[in-house]
Length: 584
View 1 (tube, helix red, strand yellow):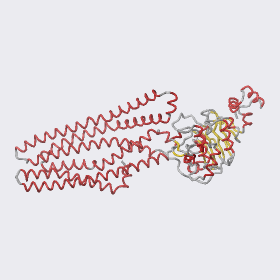
View 2 (view 1 turned 60 degrees about the horizontal axis):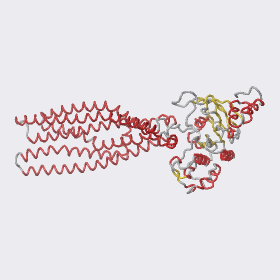
View 3 (view 1 turned 180 degrees about the vertical axis):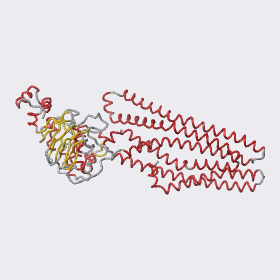
View 4 (view 1 turned 45 degrees about the horizontal axis):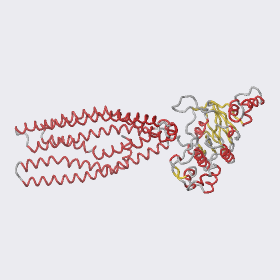
């Protein structure tokens, strides 16, 4: 519970006031039966109306005081618990923003949503319950046992037996419930992930008509959550009535034994009445404690899941130089395998160099490691071996923020956010001028923006659902260009564009004064670059310009033939460049 203590330090004064109010409320509740005993013994039994008024008046004052303390602790408990929840959610979101990519791969987004909502709510309810009930229930229970013992030690033996049995039942309940609630939270993760996947792929699902399959998948997850929920609650459902039965039998025994003692003049009616009330308070307190322990079991499971987020690796620590980069990039014998992947290196002993202002095209078949180069450049991951140099300095010796500030990325999948078009573009530069906006919109061939209803201030739905894939890509390119970074990485950024628009965009990009890395599968795009890196199964099989690769790289020539020329004619062209040409 160190996490709870850490956050509650901020509200320690309100917390202590709330705890004090709870203690005073419990004291007022405990005084009630004793005062009632005085009313019975000194007032009713002795037929003294004055004693009834005296002790009855004190009971009313004590009850009113208890009500004031109860209202105070309820208000403070709500304020502290809600503030606790808000702070915890904020810190969780901040931790997720700083996640290392391997941490993102470890916990899926559906689970993260559950942890930030359901698990935090569970923690908040526990804090609220702690301040309202947790301290009161034990105080009332212990106080009732002590005061009942002071009234009549012989009758108190029954209470000791009841408390012992209840304690054993509570321990059993905790041991059986904890693993069940852990599995319940996991089932909730899976259900949330299923819903999220449907919402993200709703268009594809409609296109393929797989509604029945999705419904079946959701039904399975929902049924699993239902079964896990029943399994988790069954112990609590069984324990609660057993506790009530035990305390009820204790009350019956107290009445029978009390009547026996009364017949022997070893107790008085007021004491028996007070004893029964104390026994009822003990029952109420024990049921509260049962609920507290049940809540604690769920909270413990939620706490473990929340701690897992805080214990995940954060993004790489800031270190080294934060200076502006010139644009030189060099890979030296770089090998990398994705964490939690197949173990097969995505790239193996990769070496190449790009000078400032040059354009490098990276081409190869699917799965050849093209996108991995972009991931390593912006330090989503670090290489397993080898080194990546930016301006001659190892990328690990630079802070992550400096690296990413100097590299603009257009990802393979254009991702936009709800808000205005201009809001999405200025992600790259918050306070961009109108001239800068106009320049990047033109460079990205995104003039369609001006034809939208509100121009650059037009609203986009979540993920840009109200525009086409090609329009998303062009806005994504504009967002990268406005950073005006010394290095621009385009990861298949024009795949959704037609040939004419793609050619226009590529020509505009090549005119910009920066180092450009174009990851593509199109020879027509790659041949425009100063240098071309050809990959196959994560290894370099070719490096040079278009003409050099046609002569000396069979893999590049095969790609060229399949896309731009008649295979036989191109083979002849290849033979013309000389026999024996192969991998370089």
